[in-house]
Amino acid sequence: MKRLARQLILPLILLCSITSHAQTNPGATWTYNETPEKDGWDREKARAFSNYLIDSSYITGLVVAHKGQIVFDYGDIEENSYIASCRKSVLAMLYGRYVEAGEIDLSKTLTDLQIDDVTPLLPKEKEATVQDLISARSGIYLKASNGGDFIEYAPERGSKQPGSYWLYNNWDFNCAGYIFEQETGKNIYDEVESQLAIPLQMQDWSRALQRKSGDLEQSKFPAYHMWFSTRDLARIGQLMLQEGRWNDQQVISKNWIQEMLKQRTTSNELNTNVPLYRGSGVDFGYGYMWWLWENTTDDRLKNAYSAMGAWGQSITVYPEIDVVVAYKTKSAYRRANSRQVRLDVLKKAVEMYEPE
Image 1 (cartoon, rainbow, N blue to C red):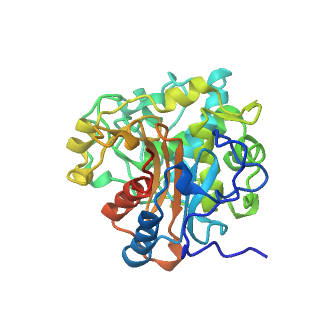
Image 2 (cartoon, rainbow, N blue to C red):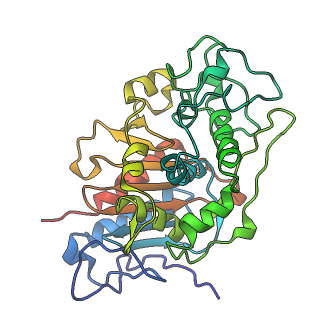
């Protein structure tokens, strides 16, 4: 029977190794640090953070891991639920081995791949490459089969050359999923299982829960929705932190991790094209379906990057301090965290860490 994760009356706990605090990934189960204060985690700030989550958010599960061990958890971290747009960052990870094997060519255009849709693509739009799609720079402003993007900020259709303009549009991401399966002959969910769930020893992964959906009369490319537990999302973050290595296996190549996190869109362009994050206290750039933290004044946030999803879902990695934060908000409750709360949680989580 699944246990309900701690509600954090004593919020910082762990069963940590007494011999070493070196970064390591979890084994078959996560371990908890019994003495996180010795590693720089402030108990009073942890208590305040727990109260903030209870009083000011709808988050249903959260994990903070430091050097591969949990220093803080909240809510139910075991239940699988919908991760919204975090799916896109997971897909980016799956792309790596097939790009490097030459099975997916990022320079191929939609013309090369014989891609079209219910609403026919314009000749200019067919010049978009796979790289443009996974960078959200396709110049294609068709409605996707599912909502939850920024299509309302789109320029006039056909007005932008592919690669020249960033817009977060689910059409790009859904088409990228379709191309992944077309070019590899593999099912996305089978690849999540073989590339991530099995080697990372995910504790709660269920292949049976995964399913695509969308209005296929609007676009023939469905959304490849995904369901994970919070603690399994944290494993994905830990893999990213470790540059694709898990134990003695290079699960995803270090080079591909670096390619995903390379800036393809600056925060200035992103905020100009979609002003939703202006004044939020976080400047985001964009890589291959990962959000990149820029212009940070807090050294703990330097070089951080995130997968983010509607309602309040995230995997965020803070490489400067060896920290991963994963949180989820169960969409079935129909209670969404504001965009500002989602970001504040990610900042408050690392403010608990005050090493000497």
